[in-house]
Image 1 (cartoon, rainbow, N blue to C red):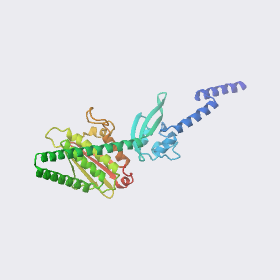
Image 2 (cartoon, rainbow, N blue to C red):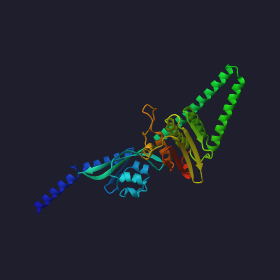
Image 3 (spheres, helix red, strand yellow):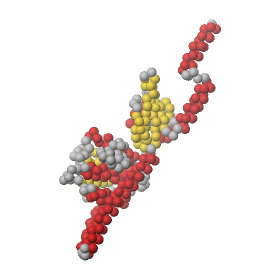
Image 4 (tube, rainbow, N blue to C red):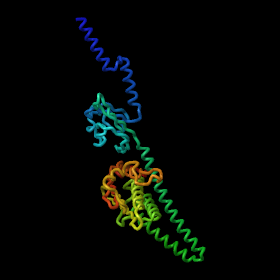
Length: 356
């Protein structure tokens, strides 16, 4: 009997050592302590799900980023109140790298990898990186650049008019100089007043006025729908400037590439109701075929030449990001031409922040 017991103990001991990778109790305790320390110290969110999509491991950062309930461990990812596409990423069986996702007002980059044992998927490891602050700074920088470009175009247009006035005076025709300056000033004032009446937010109005000067420099026209009306305060100024600025830039790029003799026009519209705000930018460019519409909003996707300026391929991605963070949606029409329509809920938009 003693021999049988000894043999049994040896077999059990060998099996335990095999299952614990040869580690003894002290080493296992130390490994567990190190595992816990690393798990909760890393600045990236970490979620591990099993083959059935149930959460097995989640660290503090993941709980914060995803606002997970205390009893998240052991529950299926689809049962945690997450967006369906994010829950599918956590429980999926495919590898993903830096998939952008908007969750709870944050911009997350989600990467997942499948853990296999003997050729069988046994778990999915998902990491979450918070890019909210960086993306917000990128958006503000893009907004500032857009306004700067618009102001530069206005300054260039004003310089051309001034040169004309000076030349007329030098030619001894002061009356013509005064008439020209007066007519130009009145036309500019009427144009600016019409836009300011339609778009009551000063920053948004200034953006569109400047963009109209840019359009003129590029041989195109930029108009605001006569029935457009966007009261101030319904949307964060920075969000509207980001959305309209990038959509207008995209539209101007589209029409500028049209052959000579083609209509090169961009039309901006804004409408507000008790529940939603709708922003629309339409152009007479070639439009976006169905396969290209979703890809157009991916960071790095662009139709501009490789010799173009730095920062190519982020404009529409910033639009999509801003719209997602405000809980809205964006739609693109069928060719010919392209009409981008952004719809934002007023309640969410009003709570979305101040000017930036």
